[in-house]
Length: 496
Image 1 (cartoon, one colour):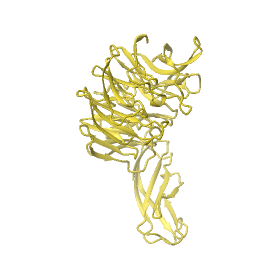
Image 2: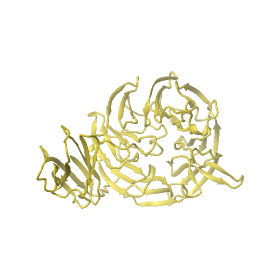
Image 3: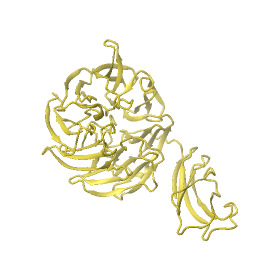
Image 4: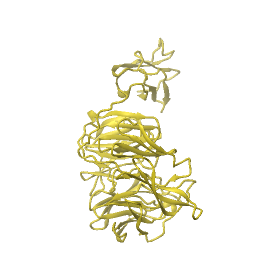
């Protein structure tokens, strides 16, 4: 058993044991930790008549360095402390190597060749979530950690941005210190309808606000100064959307391209605003039928001269300059019960959409997603996978990576959708607390976040290259800092 942890902190470790035969009568199980690497408390659970899992916590007092030894597993008729009546074969030795690292590693921040700022959800306006940079898992090391929760972290000019129930905030990438915070969300008068987008000193978000001129709640595009956190402009989009199960439907963040901010609203309207002042350039509703709130609107991506959205039934390509519809591609099997989704524009001719069946629809077929590949050159659907997909697609070197609802990473052929290989964690992990698992690629490593862990999977060896004991949203800065952010806090990891 090899584990890495950080000075002054604890984490869970576990031992799984399977008996070769059923042990009759009464017996007791104990784990002897002679060197004190754990807190001394063992949580033992039987997973079957012959299988057991023991959970322990590493002691936070362990010094920086490497700790090696063995845990002794005893199965006895009497007390495991004395074990005068051991079961045949007992005791067993479980070797361990525990590496304790410094809690912070504030190395100088310098640009990583190939890395760009993580400016919107999934990194860029095409939402590809791919960083073409050369890194090695041997160099991955935590930079700092914060206990305050933050969602959907972005990066821009050495700063990290995100939001939580207290509002939006900015932190220093160097050491995690808070630069500013604005209590404009969640528990106050304003609710977020989208994630954040940052570019050229402005932070953009779609939020609900009260319009006193017409005495009505409305959905607005807000622009903040990314350095100071001050509100620069408010642009009315539409009346506030209908709540579903007492929740406001959310759409992915806006995207920015060629000096324009593009947003898809809950009702299905797509808008172009000037990045300089937020003024409306055009507004269009490209979907041929009105969208219901359960479809979650028409979120968009932009690349290669096209603005592309998916309304649950069709992939729609628009002219970014005018808003005119260029073409649409019907998704075989897509219905009005599928939610809108922001396409992944992997290249000029390849797009991928993971669309989820709305839980509010009549007789939902599943809670999972449907992955569809489109050919933008021939304007046809290439292939689809209807099983329970739980992430957006990430394409690298003609291989498409997604996560299924069984916590497996799937590598698919981009031409056919056929499975090439799959990976799963060595230990069972909780599902990610949300519909979609965070997934991104840096160099040859596929990073995937689960409920309580983040992994880097080597796409060449197809094995786990690195893991960290916390899950959350994922982002990579231009300086090569991996950011894991969620309800449990924020962690920055040096990737070199």
